[in-house]
Image (cartoon, rainbow, N blue to C red; front, side, top):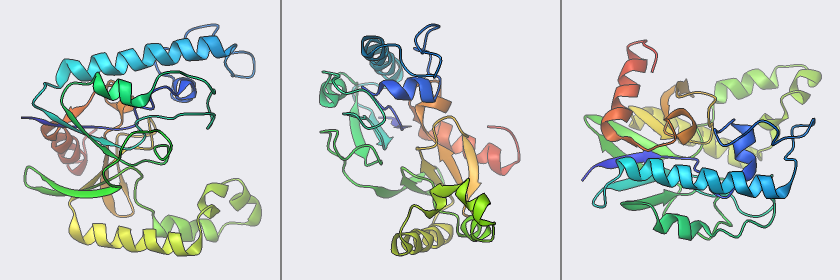
Length: 234
């Protein structure tokens, strides 16, 4: 049995195709404002994306293998997307080879797929690893943001969208992870980066957008981390 890792499938979510420039996006699909020219085209491209993700996963994952999907398996409804795709995320899950363990992401609450948890700890090779969908919250970066002018803070409002109670909880979690793990596995950031130190902890992004739209193995995850530690490009 091989254990594989992935994240951010976003099945049945047309807009993720244009947000992250997935290969299903074709010339003429978007209008001058960058929006889909029609819901028909959007749904067609989402169906093509779903088939690609199933195909690429099944090329690597065998029936006896396990895949840990680290959040945002699907995105239903009108949340930054188009209403009306008839595909059920559970139907796609049934077409995937292997046993899939789904961690919760910020889009998964209404997707009718069962997430087992939002955080987990495991071992990969000789490393202790924490796993969650979002990267850890960087307390120092937040304090630097607080020192900016009001105009500069307004240009980066995302740092202020969390309650003080929740933010302090995230800072405590980051402190725990710095003491407990060699590195973190995450998703959420799509194609922004593949490996980066956040809140003092190395993070490996197992999302499909930086991993050729397919799951990666324990061995591949460890190699990405080791190359980052050695100062090489992953």
